[in-house]
Length: 173
Image 1 (cartoon, rainbow, N blue to C red):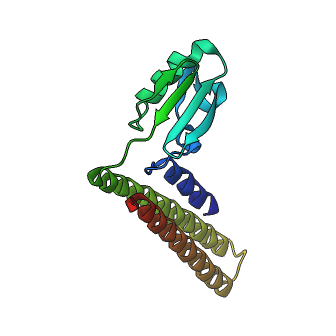
Image 2: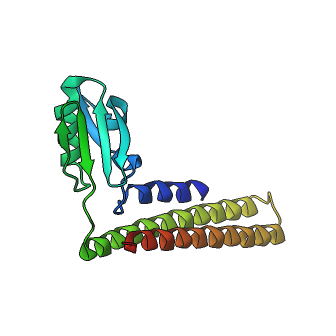
């Protein structure tokens, strides 16, 4: 359940707000001598200012492919190269785009809740099997099911809290 929450936070980090952050380009892949490689493994990624990411490839001949990979990614960014440095300005988000991103965030949150509920189901099935094999008593099974439900409720509440924070972050101008 903790891993599901951490995966949600990682996924939400990729949903961009109006501010620039280096983690935005973590999942962008570039063709590095025939093999797909993460941009952060072929270039140094820094923040130039609050609204601009600077990408400086380690090799001069990688400027074009890195710029193309960022442009072709699903992030809607338009990089511009200045010699060996690629500047990636973060465009302002329109109200409509913010609402679309909130829908994406809610879908990610629902997927995380489904993952937590699946873990609960698997744990309950494991308990029922143990009860059938007479490895545990009925009252112990019932207590453990209650504990599993409390744990599930706690993680679902944590997911909801994370979603509310991200939505507030998206709507902030």
